[in-house]
Image 1 (spheres, rainbow, N blue to C red):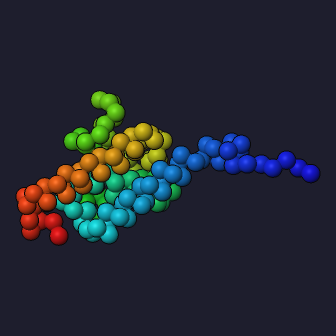
Image 2 (image 1 turned 90 degrees about the vertical axis):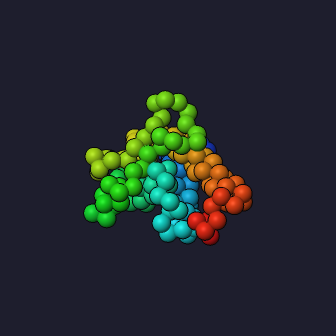
Image 3 (image 1 turned 180 degrees about the horizontal axis):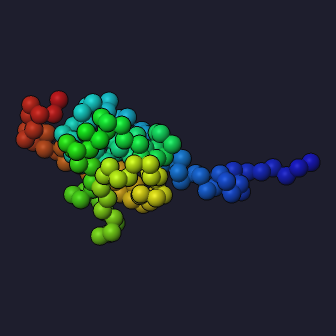
Length: 142
């Protein structure tokens, strides 16, 4: 009888697991933001980062900008300069047209950077909710 091969003992699965988890998280958050508001609320740069990263991982983990994506990028910058969570000074990222054809995860951004970005989205949405509850955003957020 052959030994049972478990997922945690399979090097191919162990190596791919962080990628699968982070890709799934980007897809889920990107889709949830789109469902919340198709224009990603106010086009905040961290939401634009999610938009472009989500599209990249959904299309083979490679940045591929169509004409509409390049137009959107010119009009709405995608960066994390004002993000609520960053691990260090070297963890500022901006999506630019020059990334066309380059890998998204584990090249442009590492796993910790993606987690920081996802946490920043949570911080941003919490602040929006708090301001809305205080009556500061009446009429702006449904």
